[in-house]
Length: 129
Image (cartoon, rainbow, N blue to C red; front, side, top):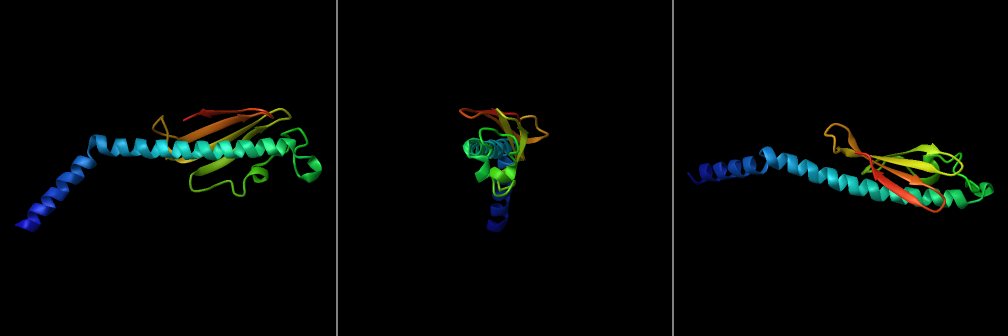
């Protein structure tokens, strides 16, 4: 009898926790956590992009330009446990770095996505999803 009661209580707690609001709430929390970690990674890559901008071309930098900057110049690997990172644009005056997370974003379909518009003296991050 005790075993049956314990099983029943466990089942009830599971259903309450994973009911209509529980699973959705948990996935939103995971998406928010993924969004914040991808944001931090993108900000770090944006600072490295600024360092690339100022580093002389002779030393592997851009020599006052973002032209020619590839993700490998600012990141050891384009993918980590938080997401995948790429460079959408790299012109003389600016670059755009994009981080795509592993969790579903605000639209409920596509993954979390953060972009950073980087210039020589500013970084502006945007939540795209």
